Image (cartoon, rainbow, N blue to C red; front, top):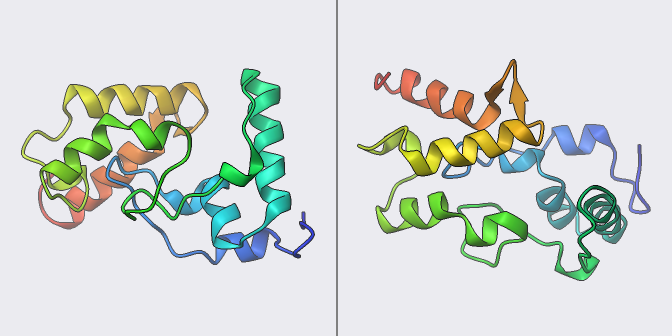
Length: 140
């Protein structure tokens, strides 16, 4: 599937991973992709999807995000995410490095991800990413 700028699945899969504080890989997010490719058709598709699913109007011009760990403004839930605020306050690369790993805030976000399909076998993809980081760093 291509947009007017010719962005296709192969382009999207070439994006470098951008692991958010919660463990979500921002490169899989439609808003992040639309921003990275500066693609107004992708922005419109996202706005249409949000309206269709949630009956919430999103102005396509506001569909911009450079990833969770970037300081520029966020879109949607990420703009008010408690996990993001907490990790910034604690100066963490992501929650995998937190002494309170698995806290209620993180569990709440991961549960929400499962409910919107960002999961594998009932486990939030973000949780799997954090567990992989912890395992790789010998923290598991």
